[in-house]
Image 1 (tube, rainbow, N blue to C red):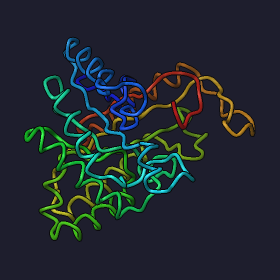
Image 2 (image 1 turned 30 degrees about the vertical axis):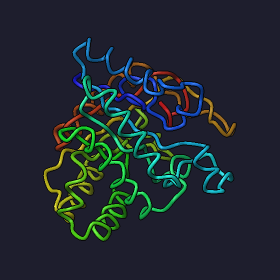
Image 3 (image 1 turned 135 degrees about the vertical axis):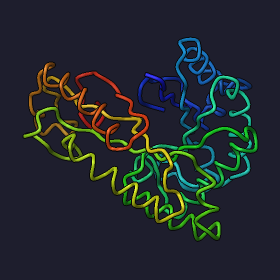
Length: 277
């Protein structure tokens, strides 16, 4: 594979995170060291890193007076976040040029704010990345087609034009999971052949926002094997053999590519909750 998704992330390789919280958690003057180490290791293997920038910061949440959640939101001290991103990009840009803005913001676990606030956050983060690295590439992180549409509508309004919005990002990322046994689809699991509909929806949204032709990546895809226990204790998921999973792996890697996706990363292989394969 050409890329690994490193968390500052998730994906091809689990790595040290570029998390804003790390400046408060005993890393002192070296909050970017785990990310530097991971990116350097992948570079030595000849693999590019896509580094996920995670805005979680409990100290900042306290400044907002919002301690009802641990999920990130638009920074209260946005200039402190901007400085964090600038410093972080400077620390790792020698080994990577690819940065992803957060992860799956349509989920309450990852984002405790509105799509409009997320759009505002995209501009804040993209501007900070480019201030430290003008030629670095920016990816929008793990959005479903409908959420992507909401964010881009808000971003066009905030920047004044679709063209100005499109200049803030280079890549659109989505995550698609499924069950290798296509007859046992449930929850957020979809058959591999349904991915074409999601890809088409993303392409349509991009065409409506002056962003036709921007690369679409899938940085998290997989299907489990075995028979994991449901996280809510309600029972077990459908049994899937390793042979079925192996067949599904090939389909989930190749099918998106022939439908216009540029990069596909298989996430993990443990027998766990299929929502986190």
